[in-house]
Each structure stands twice: as C-alpha cells, then as structure tokens.
Amino acid sequence: MATYDTLGATYGRTRQPDPRIAARIVAALGDAQDVINVGAGTGSYEPPRTVLALEPSRIMLAQRPQGSAPAAQAVAERLPLRDNAADAVMALLTIHHWTDVAAGIRELRRVARRRIVILTWDQQLFRERFWLVRDYLPAVAAFDDTRAVPPGRLADLLGGARPEPVPVPHDCTDGFAAAYWRRPHAYLDPQVRAGISMLAQTGEDALAPGLNRLADDLTTGRWHTRYADLLARDTVDVGYRLVVAEGV
Ligand SMILES: C[S@@+](CC[C@H](N)C(=O)[O-])C[C@H]1O[C@@H](n2cnc3c(N)ncnc32)[C@H](O)[C@@H]1O
Image 1 (cartoon, rainbow, N blue to C red):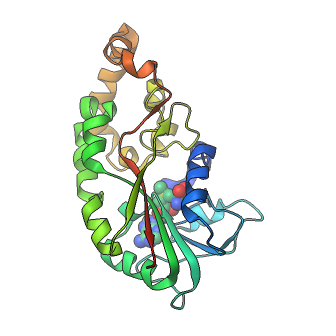
Image 2: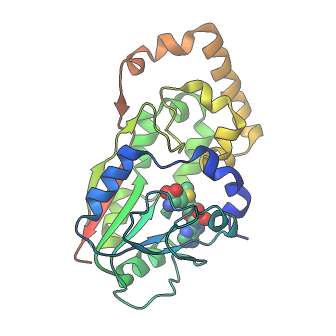
C-alpha cells in the first residue's frame, strides 16, 4: 500500500496550495506548453496546461478536485509514458518519498522534452535554520537525514540544475513542514501534524518530549523571547528549493 494511503486522508484540509509558491512554480515552468505532474498528490500547483498527473496513492487521487487534469496511478520509478511525452515534468515535495530516486529522476529525464521542475529542500540548511527541528525535534531531523536528497546529488542526477530559494511566507497556506514557522502553536495540533510527513512518520512517542517542551515554552512566553527576531519577519529561507533543469 502506498504510504499516502495511510498519511493522506486529511491532506486536502491542511495542504492548500500557497499562491506565492504557485507563482514561483509557474515562472519556473516558463513557456512549456504541456506539463506532467509526478507525485501529484491531490493536484496542488497544477497549472491549467497540465495534461496528466501521476500518483501512487488512491487516497490522494480520490481527493483531486473535480475538473482537474486527468490522473493515473503510477510511481515515478516506472512512468507509463513514452519518451519526450511533454515539454515539462514537475515533481513537487515528493522525491524524498521515492524508493529509488535515481530511477525516478531517470524517468523524469526520459519523459521531459525540455524542462524538469522539482520542489524539494536542502536538509543541511533546514536542520541549521528551522527552529522546530533544530531546537525541539532532533529525532525528526535524523529521520529526514535518511530520506532528503542532497542538492549536489540531485544536480548530478539531473545532469546539471539551477536551484532557486523558495522563502516560506509567514501565513503559508500549504501546511508543509516549515509552513508554520511563525505560528508555533500549530505544531501542537494533531491535524496539522498529520499533514506533515516528517512528523506523521516519526510517531507521537518520539515527538512527545519536544512537543511538551514547545507547549511549555509557548505558555511561559519563552518561545516568543527566544525567537523574537522571527516575529518581525514576513518570510524565511529554511532551505526549500525549486530545482530547475533545462534541456534534459
Ligand atoms: C507531500 S505529497 C506532495 C503532493 C503534491 N505534489 C503536492 O505538492 O501537494 C508527496 C506525494 O508523493 C507521492 N509519492 C510517494 N512515493 C512516490 C513514488 N515512488 N513516485 C511518485 N510519487 C510518490 C505520495 O503518494 C504523495 O502524494
């Protein structure tokens, strides 16, 4: 069973596409006439020129809004498509879930005529810069170390790529891991955590000590004193990257 058949039941509730990130993705797709979305989930960020969405989880496929692009069940490692099937292929916040990243990227290169757009994150920056994993949940950081794809490796697999920083807005509507960096109470909400795979897959027992400490720091005001500089910011760069490969 696909992992998101268990994780994905409430995805649509906390993971709404953020318009500022959507604009960045549209810009990265550039003049591509047709787009295939791999690891498409519920269809977030698919521009109208999306011709096909591929996704292994039935639960995620079932949450795609009516009228969205045609979709089929498939994994990145074996795309049921001919070579050069579309101008652009995009894979957003998904490559860390693939069982064989090298095979998946080979497939994206085979299927994309001109451009690949990947949204992912630099785990080293994420560990250093994101207060939740750095200061409260080191076990979560260790879990992500095992699955995050290092930027150098990704660039090699793509045969060269341009990484573009994606700052996270303080009111980001797509509830991924760092989306609530300026809304710390959100991490105490089980429904929010259910939509964040690094928290959902780590397990509540391992999270409890760090989350209890966070709850305490929020009650006493220690969190607000310690991270006062964050409260004055509108965006942060904690390592999310749009990785664009041209002429693949
Ligand atoms: C965090 S969700 C992202 C979904 C969507 N791209 C988005 O931005 O909202 C990760 C998705 O990757 C999918 N996934 C997991 N393993 C995969 C694989 N081997 N190939 C393709 N997609 C996969 C999951 O089922 C899930 O829908």
